Length: 69
Image (cartoon, rainbow, N blue to C red; front, side, top):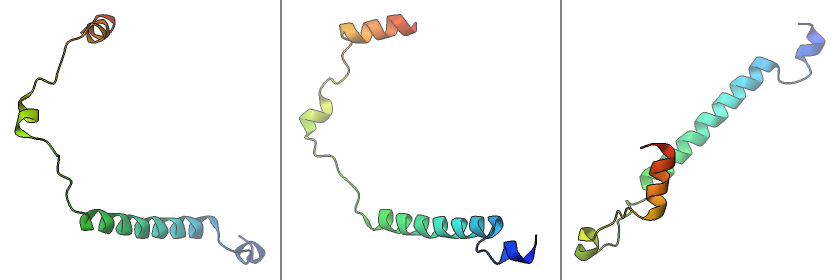
């Protein structure tokens, strides 16, 4: 590379190094934010936990039939 090209600012490799350093900083902040948050708890009663959830309705049967399950 000529000196004129180097003096124009960030080169290709310097740009990628700067980009990599920036994403590492963002990832650190994101992980710190996740660790600081309390765990979410489901608001479910004992009766809700025992009730029947899966129902094989007509549209579920059609899905199984069309996808050959």
